[in-house]
Image (cartoon, rainbow, N blue to C red; front, side, top):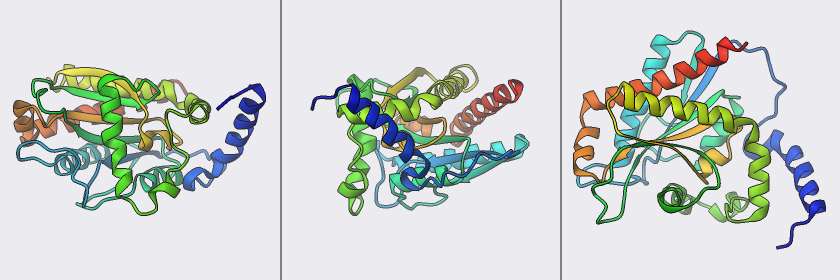
Length: 268
């Protein structure tokens, strides 16, 4: 496909028109709101267990940690509203998760997951936090493939997700336009969380990464996807099932969000 300057300008104009109603976003005029809204998204659920270890399903671990994150935020941060995409073992379509955050005009979207590697890589462990990006190489690409694969379980997925092709030049341009305003803040939040994992929770941090993840690509606010650890590492799988470790991980995410909000408040 040949993309010239005229095509780029056309894509830009069309994208600007699309953004207010993109996938359910109602495009309300910005309000002088005092409530800071955070959408917490426990990945997978229901018929899609996510990745797994020897005895652990991703959907169960991430739900426990996500609920703890929300509890810590509500108990310790003033002026905050927490909304979960799910609070029990049900599956929510990826586009519905983004629609929920967009319609709420959320300030942050935090998706929580657990990681995995193919056989022979059980030595890999640690936390990672992803922001939306186009650096789909190595393990970043494997994460993108796995997390986006749940789309195939949904009814009419070809129609619902036909605009998402990270390898298509048009999609890349649309992404750049739509996410530019949120990328810097997404990275700031992601780094806060990874710093908390390593400095306060005693976890091995693998850092902030970029990948083409649908659930982040379609949100109209700073968004991150947190990988709590690798269920394919026997030691880390055992730790992720430990209630105290879950508390530490949830506390790290909560503190990362709290620091992010405090930074925004200090710049007003």
